[in-house]
Image 1 (spheres, rainbow, N blue to C red):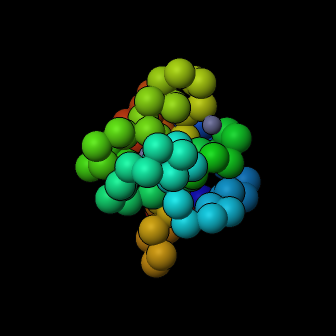
Image 2 (image 1 turned 120 degrees about the vertical axis):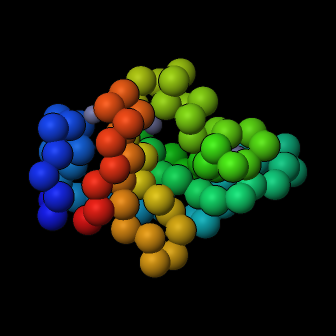
Image 3 (image 1 turned 180 degrees about the vertical axis):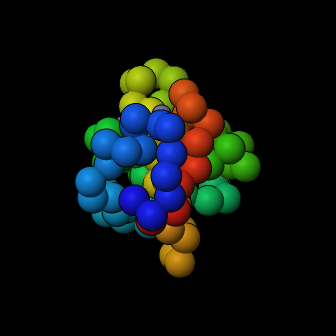
Length: 90
Ligand SMILES: [Zn+2]
Ligand SMILES: [Zn+2]
Ligand SMILES: [Zn+2]
């Protein structure tokens, strides 16, 4: 990582999981819309951000305990840890 961080979760990310498809995997099932996409670094699922109506990425993090997401938006290279509320560029 480029940025020094106190977050053990971000420090543990050796290689960043990228989105397999540029869709929210939950919203596509129900035909809902999303704003931005995030990829879970625990299991690799791609879900929608907190600006989206369903906030699937945050709900997944709370339900699964997977702490870290990466932005799945083109050109964005950052990670976020929910429990530490920590960002890191990569
Ligand atoms: Zn953390
Ligand atoms: Zn969604
Ligand atoms: Zn996950």
